[in-house]
Every structure is written in structure tokens, then in C-alpha cells.
Amino acid sequence: MSSQQPAENSAPKTQRYCLTANIEGLRTERVITLENAADLKLWKSLISFRLQSLGCQDLIRGDLARPKPEDKGYADWGYCSIVIGNWICNQVSTSVKRRLENRGVGEGKGMFADDLMDKIEKIVLGDSSAQSILERLIPFWGIDYEECDSVEEFIREVYNEMQAFHDLKAPLPWIIALAKVLDPLEDDLLSVALIRDELKEIPADEFTREKFLILSERLKIEAEMKGI
Image (cartoon, rainbow, N blue to C red; front, side):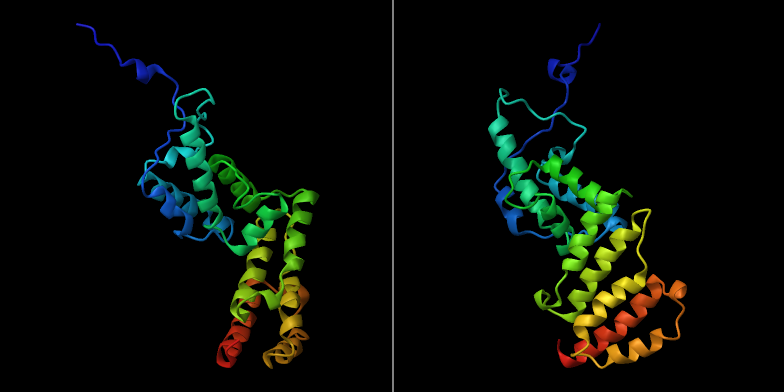
């Protein structure tokens, strides 16, 4: 006796949609913050896992076709996808948000979730073109100490932007990141003058990411003691 597959199994699979009472709760929920390319794989997995619990994991899959406007439930799919897209915008660091905004992408822009995931991945991974480097330089120089809540947050923002360059094939020297950090902190931290003296003895080609992290830690310790 021959068996026949159900008709729906032969239809091409598209992004499923699933509106639940919990979908609105995503607006303020934070699962994980994407900082740079090193976090991307774990970040995508946790985002997908959270959406799976709502039955919405397919909405971030760019390899699946979207439902067509004439399909039943298209409006529900679109609403759900945009809500999830806005939620995804809250799962990235300030530096990643800034790069998204420079491309006209971000929360409240009405982007579908799959498009947003693709944009985020491309921005985080980047490429080695001059345009890509220029796009990263603008937010790097735009980091303002006065807009950060603490010295630690300021240093973290500078580090994340600098690390983004090292995800490309044309990384910048880490001494540039230290210069960005030291200048606005000079009046607040005594460590700045001491670090400047130490730099006189360090060959430029030996100033690595590790050296930046060591010196930054000294700045953060003094800042924490001063409550800034």
C-alpha cells in the first residue's frame, strides 16, 4: 500500500509567524549584548534560542522565503518581524548601534528581523574596503567621554570600536586607541601622566592590544577609587 505525503509538506517552507501573549514582552528584554565579531556566533545562537521559545525563530532566517503579501497572515507576520527586529536592536552594544545608525538602520526604523540580522552580521564582520574603514572611523572618533556613564564604559566603547578594525584586514595600531582614551581623562586621573612617561620607553611596534588592556586597567582602578 502506497503512502502519500500531506500536501502541505510539498509546499515550499517560508518564514513561520507566531504571535503570542509574550511577544510584546520582548521590547524590554535583554538576553545578550553583541560587542564584536568574537561574540557573533554565541550571540546568534542565543537570539535564535530565545525566539524558538516563542515559535518565532524562522523570522530571522534570511535563507527562508517570506510569506507573500497576499498570503493569509501576512500582516501578522510583518508585525511580529518588526517587533523582533526592534528587540534585536537592543541586543547589541552602543558601538554596534552607532554603526547601524550611520547606515540608517536601528530601532523604530521598521526593518524586518531577517534584514536586520543580516545588516548586523555584515557590520560586525565588516570588510577591508576603504568605505568600510571610513564608516568605522566616524563612530570611533565620535566616542565622547562626557556621554559615557563612567570611565570604564568609555574605555569599553573605545576598545570595542578599535577591535572592530582588527576584524578587518587593515587594523589600526592600538596606540591610537590609547591616545583616544588618555586625552579626555588627563584632568581627572593621575595615572594618565604616569602612563605617558612609560610610553617613552615602549617601541611603537611593541604596543599591542594586551598593553592597551593592561594600561586601561590601571585607569579603571583609579577611576573606580574616585567614583568616576
